[in-house]
Length: 276
Ligand code: SF4
Ligand code: SF4
Image 1 (cartoon, rainbow, N blue to C red):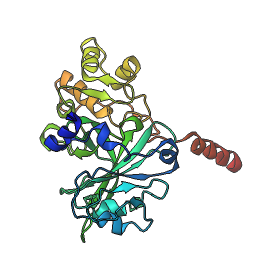
Image 2: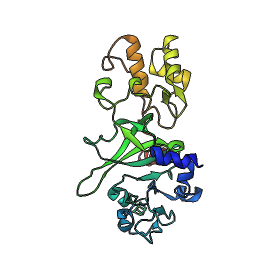
Image 3: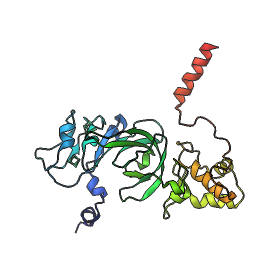
Image 4: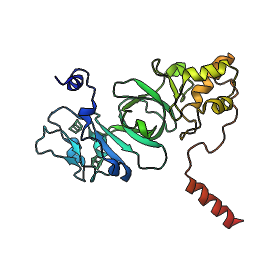
């Protein structure tokens, strides 16, 4: 008996077997953004196919066929994701340098999150994985679904499949606190693999600033440069100090506040030299 297929049938959770043929190979991943279609039911539905002007969704000889992406033709334009009624299409981009990539997720709730807001990235089973930053929001309307792009470590791009906005009552607007993290896997810093227990242990041992915790644990020193974990660490420090997050002295937050590639910095210094 195929138990993984049963899982899909029983709980709607795709297994590695179900995803076979739905993810691109190494070369196509580097080329640019691409669509991942997680549509497993043979139903009479084809908006994805007819909307794709690159004919990148195959085979569709019959309207009940399951859609498969031809990654050599897909440009990651996201048109299909905007019209899929099943919210089954995700646009992944892991072509950029560094350890972070992006995933564009269909989102049907209001209000939409704002750009730069922290949300909680969730897996296929709906469980919270980690805080993630919104980097782009495409509004919906006129038969099109809104798409929200999150910045995610590349190793998790095939795991994040939804997100939620943290409850306002447990967080200052736009940030995540430890209360938003999952109890079973409270990872605070995904980049460096630092969990909540380690952060709390350091605070209990007398490390009382973000910088001290950063230097001891490396939390915040990864490619996202602390944009995901900093607020959680701050909220833990504020809790320890017995003050609100707003009252807590946050300390320094040195630029760059977003990752900057070395060629941008190099270009800047060349321009400085020319102007001097
Ligand atoms: S992302 Fe664009 S090119 Fe790729 S399958 Fe969807 S509509 Fe076609
Ligand atoms: S539009 Fe969405 S639900 Fe319909 S066949 Fe395409 S992927 Fe499946």
